[in-house]
Length: 468
Image 1 (cartoon, rainbow, N blue to C red):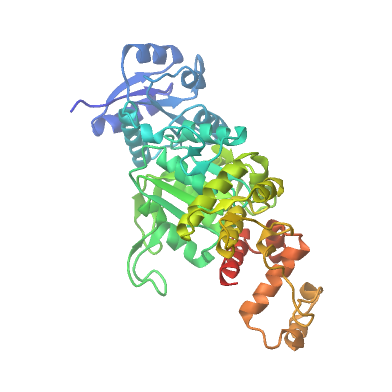
Image 2 (image 1 turned 60 degrees about the vertical axis):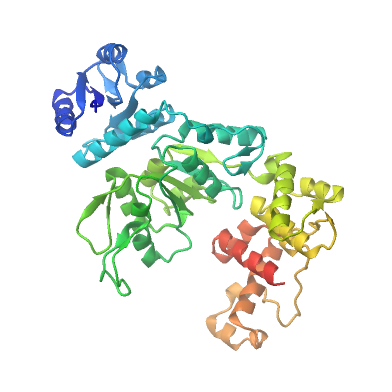
């Protein structure tokens, strides 16, 4: 089999020769260029699978090569110093395959070069199922609004890149669906997609869940275990609720992103892992950085390709498309053939702001279909929170949580007879639903008041709705 050729565009002879020696040792053909002019000449006369690109060149900016690229161009790997990290991110946004920070470890250089070469070999293969789908459906999404078409275009453009993607948006807008779309639209789709919720796993277990552990590393580690990063090797790792990650683990995640190596808890051996990172949060990441809860260097490392998902209320007629599709799906699951939304229900759906977004719409439709005995379904969303629409939240005065609950001392709470006879689960429900009412149905604000994740409240509400 013919060896792949790699172009090294670097004006430092010592660095260029060092990269060349490592690449030639594993069988790649290498061509050197020290200026933009030499690089352009080489690109016109030869075919390269990949190119290492230094952005600071004697006769111009290396970014111009990225802007000039076409279908025959190699996969560009940008090599930069720490001080030029923002420019490397800019390069990723205009089409670079990946970027490496000097000094570059040999294992990382070779792993990245191998991935770039493989991607370029696949570039001309036909894979129509990975391209934009006609009509209102796109890799798990339903919608045709301009804001969603922009999201779809971004997913298409960056699907095959190794660049980290940072997805933001309110709870229930489809952040995990975005991660799955990026995976299924990429050439990694035949490998694993692994999702891990950083807010749902206790701090002392998250490192093990992410990087794995060896037998005996801690109490309960009765066998060796690979973590999510290794399980996703060759595929995509989705880190949901990334802003919930503790600062100590953020340091280790940053190290993993810089080196491409993981170290299992209790092990002294580092292992290479090739994953595409997609992360998500419903918080404002810039605020988390400003308030010291999220590392700035990690944020900029992750926020190479930002994707913001619009709230459902900002998607126009997409709401009805979604409602009709969800109604058909739920009706099939519940064995209610022939169920359809009434004209009044469609009007109500369009006029309601849906603070819980797609998840709230789905739950409201399921409840309406399950509780209705008619083929034409009505939906009651007249109250601030549609979770409470079919069964308003009311409590006897003796069970209502006291307004000054947060101000009472532990001694006062233990002596308060208003909680007598209630289980912990019942108390939890009273407190959560009261917080939702105080915040006029806004789940995000209620979660902030209770200092929990909004996803926790949504799971509780869905469980209670199913048991009522």
